[in-house]
Length: 231
Figure 1: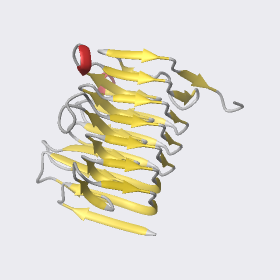
Figure 2 (figure 1 turned 60 degrees about the vertical axis):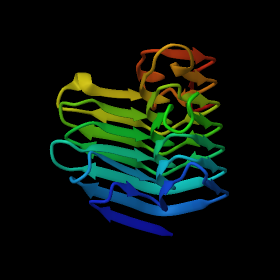
Figure 3 (figure 1 turned 120 degrees about the vertical axis):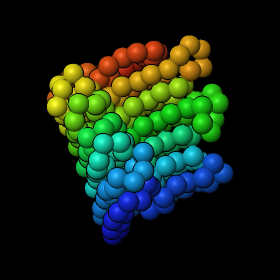
Figure 4 (figure 1 turned 180 degrees about the horizontal axis):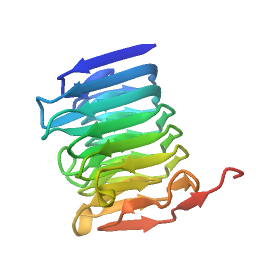
């Protein structure tokens, strides 16, 4: 059983980060990962890793993940598998509760707090064939707070494919208009062509969140929808 407590450390998890040539496979973890701090612009916590630049495959987490950013500037990222994903997560599952809190931006996701392309792989990054049953919560002040059953935020060519979530997804903020929650993704951003976010064959429990994506921007959505508790 894992217990990781990181104070003023920007990356918390079994691995602080998985490098671009790294692979984590067939790992099952339970316990807790918690982090807090104010000395970094971005703080990441995940059941497997704070930041993934490589491949995470066939991993399972029941870790309770909490990241709290203190002060005016830090951003808080928390995910069941990775605080932030810049490459590939596939065939993974999460059942732990995920919480991100900050007075600035927060990103919380059942699999990844955020999933962003263009950093490691030019054509985007991916979360494929994953599911989460854990509750997801993002809370903060008057800045945007993103909570998603799979990813808090997806942008710059990220792809979410063949995923589902059943955990309750909530986002709260001082200004309700900045609280963005979705059964699959809290929000998305991208451009044209390969930079468009793609959400394909993803489903979420109808009682867990009101909509697929908290706010939709440049996204290609294909074969997505809800299901109820009776199947």
